[in-house]
Image (cartoon, rainbow, N blue to C red; front, side, top):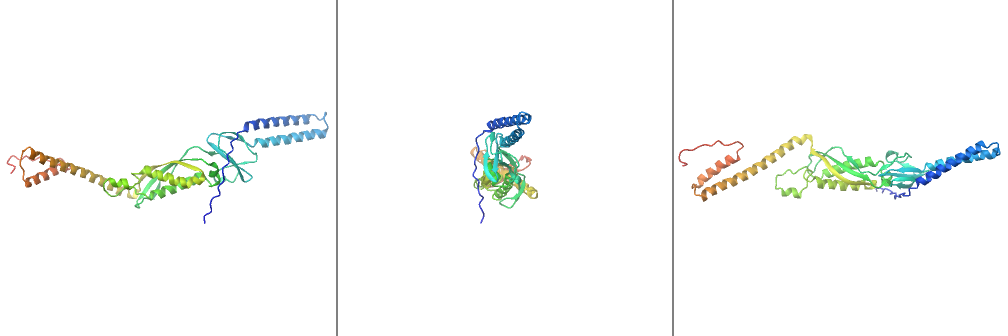
Length: 320
């Protein structure tokens, strides 16, 4: 049975009291320094034991105020830090400002150094992940090359640090998995030459890229939610057939285009022939029997559907 990740509830630190602590600590250090100088120079006025005690107390005071200064943290806009105290989660700072916390806390860095005290801030800015192009098989088994970009940002630094080892690598791997999963569900393009109504019922990677990108976004968001990541957008940036079938598919597309063009030409030619025969009959220009109509239709279709211009033949005798 899969063990569920133990979620750490985020506790945000919002009190920016760093400036007041800095002033007090600096004043205390100056006072201790002045006390140390007084004890060191007052050997003739005060007993030796008292001077030694004053010097020791002042040194201890300087050390204490120095430790207090170690608890100061500066957080820039769109940045966050996650703090731990002796292995326990202490809190998260997400707002910009000058803060003071327990001087013994550690700033947890994401990635492979998550268990150390390396100081590293987590960016809350919107980031673009340019996923590399990869070869996958579509729903029909055709190898295709597809690439996508994901626009994302960290919204929960606590989950990003504690729930995954390295949230950047985690997102990249999940993005690859999502692209492969979604690409296998749809064909690159329709292979049949039916009416356009078929395209409305069946989605393709080429014809429905926006809808498929939305499906990728939803699937990717489900996978990276535990890492405290919000996926704002996924876009397909590259889509093509693989090299081994690109030439064959190009011939297929060219054949489809030629057939569609011929179909339009034939439809237009039939309409023009019908219009010519009806116009001749209505204006009583010439009376044609069925055999002559068939010959006329044949000649007009050849002229209208030919790839080259027809050479006219002038008949100077009777048409019969």
